[in-house]
Length: 400
Image (cartoon, one colour):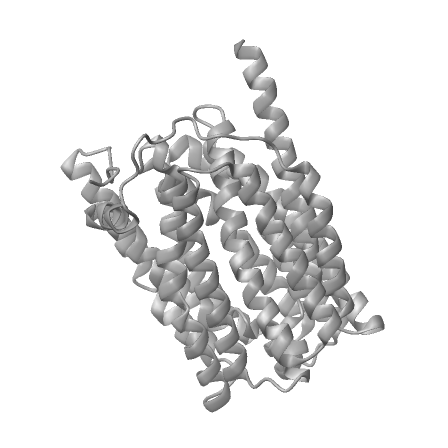
């Protein structure tokens, strides 16, 4: 019986990995050069920042609501719904080719991404063997980034030859093709009575150590939001790189991310996810300051590869901390609340980055983002120390 359960878990995990690769291939093709496409459609940097703000709010809210819904409903249905929204958004952007519809389609992708991400990581937490959770997260994230990296590279080739709208059609096709792969995964324990959403939210936020964890991620996410949309724009305007070269650069960034996902996951499983995440936060400040010093394409390639290696320390470790701090039946909500809190509050960073790009100088978003991020590793480290001092391993409760 145990062997059958292990085989089922491996099959479900393989399906999740396949979906992650396929969907992110489409997302990478459609969005790697999106800031450049939007600028051609008449968006200013401030408007691009505002659009990223809308995407992030949509992602944050859908993460929280889907995390709460997953305590009650079937995961496969929720996962399928997210893929359908992705397909509809991609098709709309392909057919319209106007700035308004492309922008609204991108916000719809934020909704789909929040639902998809929360569901997939919850499912992985249910099928992962004991003591290997961060590694399993890392394996999945490696597959997802592999798809996104290939998509980023193809984005430059496709956009330069066929225009910026065709990639959105490919996203729609790949999203629909992922639906048959959805596995049947149920939560290990359903709650007989789920507390109201506000009660669950407050229960998590009142936990001091979890609050430190969230605060550090909020600062980090605000800093990253300041600069992220302007990485390809800086390459085009300040370095003079072509669309194909920028597509290759974005692919290198993702290749840097995926190349060390699994090794960092194993380190986190062996020595602790919190320490790996603290190191990531500290090193991010350095890499964000170094990127705008790039003066040639080769320098930019090297810097984004370094940003990728540092970035690979992040997602598996933060998701391991999130699910480990919560009761098993609230894993989905823990993931949803973490993404909701960090992403919603970080969305102001996109506005800050856009305003600084338009009104200061092209390196300003990177410098401001790094300055905001400086305190995040200190706060996360303090949160871990607080958990040790109190001796409370339980974290938040299920609310009242």
